[in-house]
Amino acid sequence: MTSTADAAAPHPAAFPDDGPPAGAARAATRGKGQHKGQQTRAAILDAALSLASQMGLEGLSIGVLAELMQMSKSGVFAHFGSREELQISVIREYHTRFEEEVFFPAIREPRGLPRLKALFERWVRRVSVELDSGCIYISGAVEFDDRPGPVRDALVAMVQTWHGALSRAIRAAITLGHLREDTEPDQMLFELHGLILALHHDARFLRTPGTVDRARAGFERILTHYRC
Image (cartoon, rainbow, N blue to C red):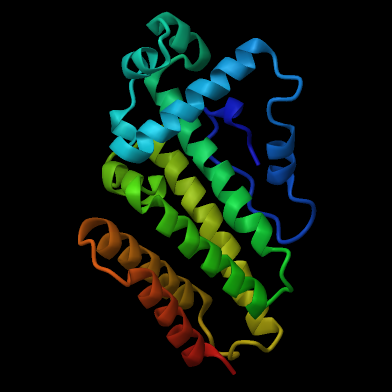
C-alpha cells in the first residue's frame, strides 16, 4: 500500500488476498520513532480527515487547518505543499484506516463465502459508524464525479482497489463451490455496493430507522439467489 507520504501517486497497490496485515503493522508502529515533523504531519492529517468527514474534501483548506491546529498557514503548507496534495493525503489516510478496520480482519476468515460475509459485515459496520460524520468514498464521489484531476483519480483508484478485493472474494466463493458457477461477479458486486449506498442514503439523509438490518437482510437475499 502506498503511504500517505506518497500522496501525489494516485494508484495504490491492490489489497492482497492473504499474507501479513501490513496496514495493521503500520498502525502498531505509528508514533514509534517518528520525528517531530512526522508527528506534526500525522496530527494535521488526523484533523484534516475529521474535517473532511464532516464537510467533504472541498471543505479542506490550508487556512482552515492552520486555524484548527493553531499553526501558521506556512507551517501547514510546509507539510503538504498544496491543497490538492492535502486532499489526496486525506484520501490515502482514509483508505489506510479502511483496510485496517475492514479488510485485514476479514481476510483472517477462510477463503470463499466466510470471507465474503466478513468483508460485507465489516463494511456495514464501518458505514454505520460513519453515519454521524460521513463516508469519504461516497461524499467524494458526489463532489468529484464530474471533476477530472488528481483528486478524482485518487478516489477512483481507492474505490476500484476495494471493489477488486470484493470481486476476488466472490470469484473464490464460486471456485470453491460456495456460489453457483453461473454467478456473474460484477453483477453481484454491483448489488452489494447498491446495498451500502442505500444504507448510507436512508440512514444519513432520510434518518430511516432499521437501515442496517435492512442492508444485512438484503445481503442474505443476494446470497440465497447466488448460493449453490
